[in-house]
Length: 320
Ligand code: ASP
Image (tube, rainbow, N blue to C red):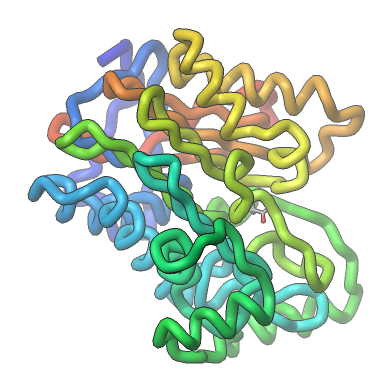
């Protein structure tokens, strides 16, 4: 473990509304198994994942089950049920999953299915393909026994109707501190996996797909090296192949923390206007080193291992 400031154990804290992240700096390293998840709902996801990892379960099961818990929370306005709709009032979901054998599955623009992450896993395990979108993804989900469900809650409908009064599209991320859930894990066997699921940017254009279902953008895993995932303005992540470059930097010996930082710097370099370009990355390598970094302050994540059970503020480049 590196230097720590403002240390705050999560014990007794998870589930309370007043979660205050602590800030770490330096090289962060812990023992496997490990799971790392984005934002405050990462605490909820990690709890489920840890039940699996601590009993020698696989990283793949851990990340899938962890993010499913967040998909099922109707109060979360950025993932699964209760997710904010697009500008036309449709909740459209993006998700992907990747295992330690470079196998992956993804769904995009999927509607009326509570657990897009599990549909993505079925794409990985039951088809010859990596990605299914829209109607084809829904059809496949139904064939696989997923039930159709209306994901637009009364609250998210009301918020959308209020938004319609002005219909101003501002891709504001980070404000509600509660965005995409992305999880990466290293299990006791030393295998890595990752999962990423979201309803995307609130009030996006109908048909818009973000980084979260794009392998190499919102998520990338290479079992020889490490895993990385992202959250925030998907367009910025796709434009810079975010998670891929982080893994490739780790392949060249750069620490997860420095790799996340360099990927953020790449985004900054490639954008003339950084207004609302918030992106947060997480990464982990095979040695149990991990890190997180964001463009602006405000990005948080949760880490769980035998030694760590913490909710952290990431380091960042620009103070808002
Ligand atoms: N990355 C997601 C997207 O662009 C949104 C987010 O993480 O807040 O769809």
